[in-house]
Length: 444
Image (cartoon, rainbow, N blue to C red; front, side, top):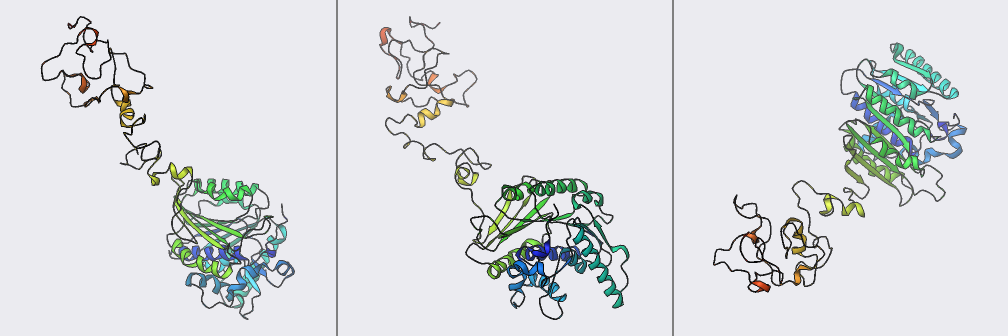
């Protein structure tokens, strides 16, 4: 579908988040002398007039660049982005807003290369015209021509991405921000990233996406976390509470694969300020997550309230952090039933789940008769006389000693078992010969 035109949305809060992150990524790439390639899969028109009919129809720039224009207290990382926008408006009036291709053109160096793709025929033509005018302006200022530094192609950025990877310099910054008009765009983004990481795993890949009520949008970030990249960083900005009808863009996110180590501290410094300035109601918030692709598990998650996310519900009961359930940390013992709140106190009268019953898995049941004739586990053994001192398996027994402690021969005089239960041992069933003896009392 080719109905999407970014001119209607230029300069909104989603553009602020996207281009602020893009500026910081370029600054990081510029720290090394080696050249790099910037690839933009959905470039748009490059520059947008905020006084045009499309931009003034909904005036979405009032949710983004508008409130920031005259602020003097912006954090230093955000000032880099704001100064770039003001530089293309020398009169001081907010008239033009840059798209991602213009941001890349201003932030890259002479030796870097730009590969821009746009499928919409009208926007593709405007993009080429804008760069042609920019080159002519540089020539008037006496700057040297940059040759084939910028290549613009009308086509699908998804299909063209793999042909450019890996780049000759083995350094690349890729920005993917399709319009997400159709649900299939979410799948295309993931598939393109999966293939790109297979061809060039060390590149930096930045993905913008809208946070909507549809299922594809809610599951999008979790699916990107499973991609085979070394690390990822996820940030979202919400400016207002979504309406009950689900229409309108209230939140957006940036997902960066192989992010620079400098980006997360800059986000933590800037995102609270953006929530404060751009927020419309109590629903305004931000979220920062980071993690590794090996397990896909977030190692840190920070929001407006701060602090790491804790498991809830069934996840809490089965979590190693809760100390109970089937999951345990290395060296952590399995909690007893009494600790988990199942059953009464240990050893309470009439409690069949006491310590003696729980030890049956590793012990010889009380009242066991002939060898190989176990007593049913459902019987209540707590009602049979006094307890034996130790009926558990003893690993320190000698080679010729019985397996269980209660089978060992007492050190004192031996008592013969009488007929009819006379002189029977403690805990022995009435009328039953002692273990290991015949009914006549002689050893077999």
